[in-house]
Length: 119
Image (cartoon, rainbow, N blue to C red; front, top):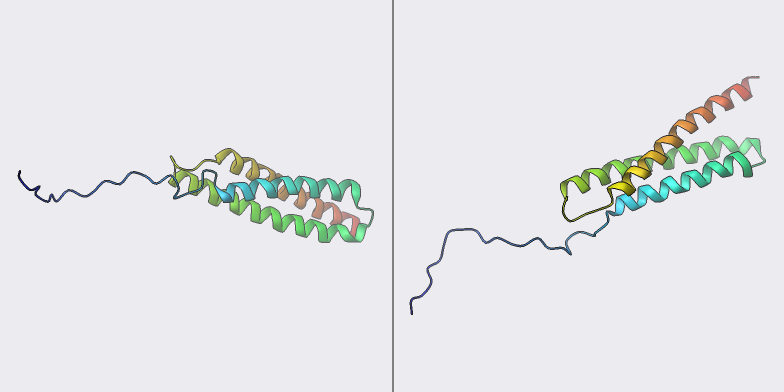
């Protein structure tokens, strides 16, 4: 029997499915923040009776929406680079849509409050 000669070809490793989670964590965060923005917006419109608290709630909603949009964009980029191993692009996109809608509604709310305090 002949001994095998070492070859210079690099070893090919199979992709490790345990390396990344199946659904991107940032996509989950973005979706949860998008859902939380909807709940927070409903609370601001219908549940809050104190007009003086509305600016603080709008600022909090605006900041969480910015964070959710950032997480959604980072999730889309990670999913694109880790294509066969990660999923959750729809979650990230729905989170982005919810966050951007509430960023726009926060601007509308700030404008309406400026009209209220001027008058």
